[in-house]
Amino acid sequence: MRLNEQGLSDRNVWEEKGYDLPKFDRRAVAEATKKAPFWVHFGAGNIFKAFQANVVQNLLNEGVLDRGLVVAEGFDYEIIEKMNRPHDDYNILVTLKANGSVEKTVIGSIVESLVLDSANEEQFGRLRNIFAEDSLQMCTFTITEKGYSLTDGKGQLLPAVEADFAAGPDRPESYMGKVAALLYTRYQAGEKPIAMVSTDNCSHNGDKLYDAIRAFAEKWTEAGRAEAGFRDYICDREKVSFPWTMIDKITPRPDASVEKILLEDGVEELEPVITSKNTYVAPFVNAEECEYLVVEDAFPNGRPPLEKGGLLFTDRETVDKVEKMKVCTCLNPLHTTLAVFGCLLGYEKISQEMKDPELVKMVENIGYTEGLPVVVDPGILDPREFIDTVLKVRVPNPFMPDTPQRIATDTSQKLAIRFGETIRAYEASPDLDVDSLKLIPLVFAGWLRYLMAVDDQGHPFELSPDPLLDTVCPYVASLSLNGDQDVEKAVSPILKMEKIFGVDLYRTGLAKKVCGYLRELTAGPGAVRATLKKYTQ
Image 1 (cartoon, one colour):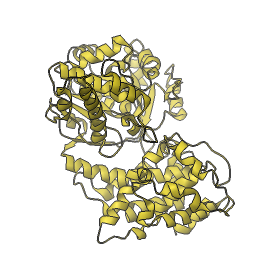
Image 2: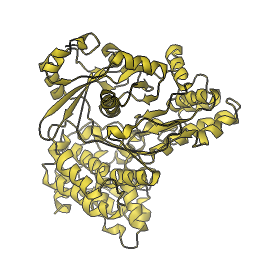
Image 3: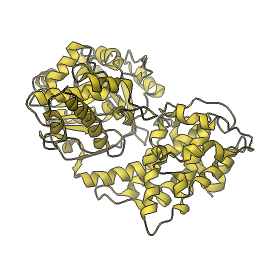
């Protein structure tokens, strides 16, 4: 059983093993897509394969759509070269349900894959041709929040961005520069309309994409590298829109236990690939069954009826409410809490942490007690029910191989949104007192303790990737687990960094509380557990 066109030609073998196969004529879909592409997705990672690609597959199966997806990878070209191409753009989605059942689906909705590499004239030229097509309605992104950043952790322009600003749209090297160049192609083709839709898990994601693209448009037009009208085109929502979205689906790294299930079925060539950029990719993805994608309905060139695939279309205000509900209160802060303390306590699965009474009490208090009072009910999803599902169904799912180490990635980029927004809401409320926050400051202290890269037993561990590690780790380098040290002197510069926490913790009055917690967390081996017990009673 090989995952490619030839291997899937014997459908009976796959179906007898319980695999749901594409029910459409893939060749016809690929040909129709080539003639009139309507959707390009940037970022060939797991969330895309498990979510957007599956939505399109379902709609193709039902006859709602007759064209498929074009995916472009702009960060790690090896994903396309070593995973998509050998498997003819097929992948296997393994849905792990909380009741222990497993659904296995061969996804065939991706019918063309390209590298977003301006040095590759053939493939970048193909993307330019696609962007010139009248039929192109939308581009979506799953490139992580830092993919939209034009600066490094110190606020300096990335070298590739700086070079692209000066050189213009002919052969850009930075991710956003390449996307901006493709939009310039669309502008030159007749200022054709399009929706540029970030579906990354970050606040006001459409604005992050817009700000990055607008920066290129302004620099290029000011320098005469692009026609003067390009900036106006980018800024005209009737021509180029940047909708806000809220996405939610837990899609961990492909897990060995899932690979074992597929191997026992007889599926061949499942070996994962670790690329030179340290991306871990496999021919399958494993994911939970719950999924949400709420999208601002702003598509100047129209859109397919994706609501038939479960997507929720609404106005920007409602997306904002849903996004804040999830990112700032009802899921992401709880995930980050479990990630930080899971690493400190030696957990290897998030689901295992939900058997830890102190951690359960902590996330319940952060969600229901500290967070829920500032949530605005968006109407289309109920906040309390959302938290209930997160804490009682999704996170405890023992079949989800998600790890605290994965979720701890880029924590410095997440704290401001996941907790800072709640602090600001408390400050703005006449009925709430910032000083009443007890466990959110404990998460901040836990993160500082995590940066020491020593677990609660005093054993070293590897920090998850984070663009600010070089900035913040030196501040905790002097700290140890001896309990006799000036904690505040060491970390006070970090506590003032609004970029990290969303607020100056000294201005809010929370800095002393964070330092007090950190002092307790560093009192010696076992201090993390003791501190959690003390404050979750």
